[in-house]
Image (cartoon, rainbow over all chains, first blue to last red; front, top):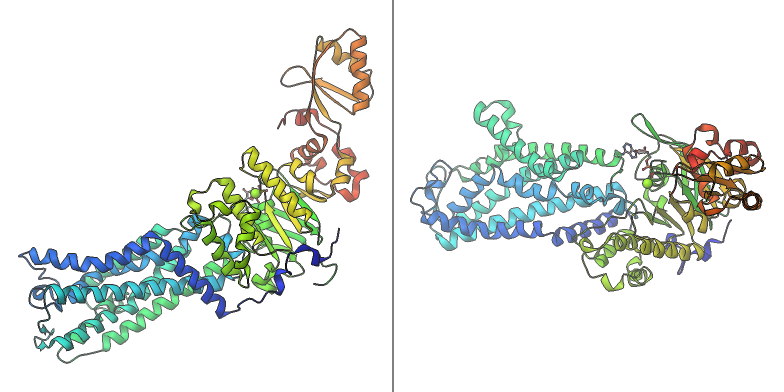
Length: 293
Length: 335
Ligand SMILES: Nc1ncnc2c1ncn2[C@@H]1O[C@H](COP(=O)(O)OP(=O)(O)O)[C@@H](O)[C@H]1O
Ligand SMILES: [Mg+2]
């Protein structure tokens, strides 16, 4: 019953082919994760909404007499185009950021369960770890892309539709246009660490539950609960450990005398969430039995 | 590769799902170049075994080597030279067939993507390769699964019930494809719940039953153990025919559960009995083969009590007692 191995294949056995190893494989898999995301209507629609929504928002706001005065920079939206991106930044932290990142992060693992394709990709030449890092990297890329697109689109919408008047700082001083633009972009950049924290949270929940809806809605609900806690309990210690707190760190940048403590603490807290959630997700994915599909 | 290393070798393999032992101390060896069948009814543990082979689930006990490599030591390189699919192959519905193959070729690395057109041709999907897989029929997806496997230019092809869920034409095409691949010298491990499918192309089989090996050995040895062919018989006087059968050695006649009689005998014995019926003035109105011998053996091995549970090709004589036909079982299992 034993035949020579050389007769079994058309052009040489599969095992002698040169194959990328280690990090090279993560990059290959990452490229395909990005290609898959690009092929999905949901991803494209999300980016399109991020691009267009700020303009719609500014136009709608322009027609309103009542201003969103309760929100930071709400009362200045007609006075300076630089107030628009800051108003939206404050608002987005409530649930928009968790939603935007988790549309991909909460789905990128669970969609393999939904399509039954774990077995398809895990029976090739990539390890589970390599696939895990490729997907995580792709989700992070998407989060960064969404944040960048939204930030630039808000800034452009504000400047084009309202104007580049000087912006009032949180201490009441006026910031000239150039400085204001830089601060607006810096403020948006401070949202990246907690956004990546929510990305990791979405990844963890979707790996554990194997469900996209849970991976998407779970982090949003957790985010809202954290906000509720912060709202009810003022300034206790636990508040500093919540993943929503770092979203406010940009306030320090817009003071007349900038302070960076919250930014530093927020980055550490976000990194903590990131490491913890990814560790749990990684372990769970490595251990689990792939019985579906 | 070292000569003599089996393509697949399982020793005492166990997998439990909670309280259920899906694979229960299974030993199995597939040599390089052979076409091997894992046969068993639904729930026998075939898929679970193959999932362990592919590293999708982890065994609770025992070892499983693929070309001498284990998952614990070799990781995904265990699957070098191995391809196939588990249950029905799954793809990304929002990508075209070709994009799906490109993705998998990318994950394989090397020059796999240069084979894509070739494998699409082999499975007859070249025309539809640009369409999204979401619009494919079940049979097309099954063929795309074969294409995705061939992309790896495998030495060992593992197919889990490849004809399952296909329409008759699809089954025919899939069998022809598997036969052709098997004929090319590839080592093939094929699971099936259908004796026919395995009998045609496999050299050796393992028959599984609720997680355990009920038989393993060659198809030829299995044939030698097969019981008498089973027929359904209709006569002008069934009662008389039934009484008459007592006088004929090697002939078993019982009332058929669906009316008429069930006749089980080797051809020569059956001939004698049928002639005797004519002589006694009993007309034979219908006689047709109900279950082929191998198939009926398969049902006995996998459906009856534990008596037949430990039959083995290497121990034919000692187990033949456990293989005696049981009419209530065999006649009840019309395909
Ligand atoms: N993920 C799972 N959880 C619990 N039981 C399972 C799981 N997968 C399979 N089983 C059980 O294991 C047994 C063997 O199943 P399977 O390997 O799919 O059989 P087959 O492929 O031969 O039809 C069945 O009883 C099945 O119900
Ligand atoms: Mg099965």
